[in-house]
Length: 343
Image 1: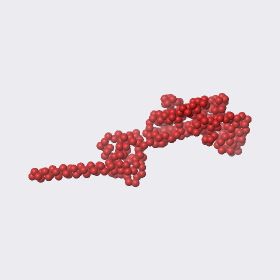
Image 2: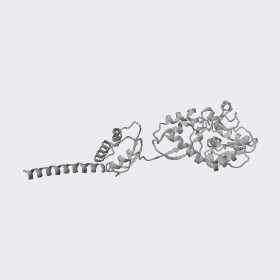
Image 3: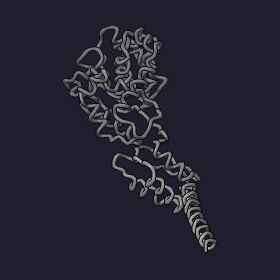
Image 4: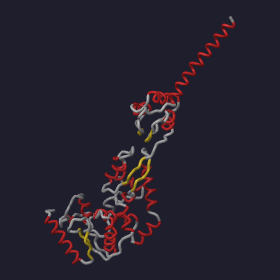
């Protein structure tokens, strides 16, 4: 009887070990199974502030293998899984255990965020948030908020001066404050000692360089011509002449579609109307390109005081040192406009 009892106990132990081993092996296989189903390409998982563990699993359901998903759910139920926002890149063959660690530790992958040269803060907000969790309306409202801009050292007219058009590596879930801090860091790196000294040599602050550069970008898309235009406007500034830049009138009127600036347009009463008010405007009329900024910092040294679009509509300009010469250029251009019926 004792022998039978002993055998029975050993049998029970063996059975328990066998079952335990099978269970352990099953879970081992599941947590070490590839999360993505066979043939599935790299998957990008976005987790936002509204997500819960269940919603995260739902987002993965269509691309996950059965074993991998069971392993992921098992890990989440037995270990502390606090959802962390972010953009997570899941490669084919990556084990459920490794994916769980990735999500649990917030090991997200960055995105490339482009700050473009655009005309309005609304468009800027829309473009930079296109690949971010941030809502474009949140950014646009912040850039239009005097108190928010003041905290950054700007006002709503000069806030464009903070941004340097380029492509930056950031995290998808970056906060508004962190984004602004990053932009300030990039601004300070761009405006190094060399560029600041060049700005001083032109009698301008970095903000004023950006303001003048914004006019130049509106005047031409021809990068080779930008230093020439910069030199011309600097000549006018240095002589105390009105800039008389047509793009500033379009900005004051809120209409960049105007093909022809008429005398009635020049009457708009706005500090951005450089036909009425001397010096530079209160802020940029667009976020200028780096090429335009460099043109102001490295202008062509010329004696030009006037410019007029060429009558061949090539997008380039005729430059003049005297008003008489400029008037001749202007007449040829006006005649070309009339011939094309452009009003």
